[in-house]
Length: 259
Image (cartoon, rainbow, N blue to C red; front, side, top):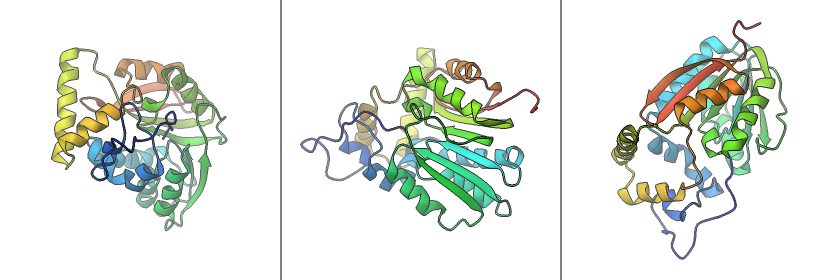
């Protein structure tokens, strides 16, 4: 995940207990070591159909990854996606490159993947906006809930760098929160997402705290803009693989024919 500008919870106003989101003030959300400690549980309760999206990505790897294939995860957080893919293909020798700006996230990823002997893993602590990507010939590039935390001006370049580091048969999967352009659907999407979180154990106070903490930090694209950004970066044949209100998974390929 991309680290946001340095700003932590205000100790005078942050709740000493409860959901991690309640420890951050307005516009102050960032991926701290404390967030890394609870991230798998937090994201699972915060992102509707998170496990279904992870299963979708892992299943797609059946077609998109050869044996000794190379998976690149831009904003890998705690390594959940790599673990899902690896456990689905225990007989394949896979190479995984995990990028994250936060060392605490990569440390948690190393714990997640410690028992997976079939993986060769490179852990890369880097800001993907500024650092050239150090891999090549990626068969499957992932950006799951990553672009939405990047400045809008940087997103196409990040996707372009990923395209340049992909193999000719490579694929891209992006998962994002998107912004419905019609205010009526946007209202429904917002309330439906809040209902999801409440049904999964997040209190109304924590839902409100997370929304405040994300102000100016999470900036969703409209779906059409996301598609255009992927195409502008050199990927082709974009296809929506999943959509639930504001949550979208998009797939694309490096070339039209894989040559």
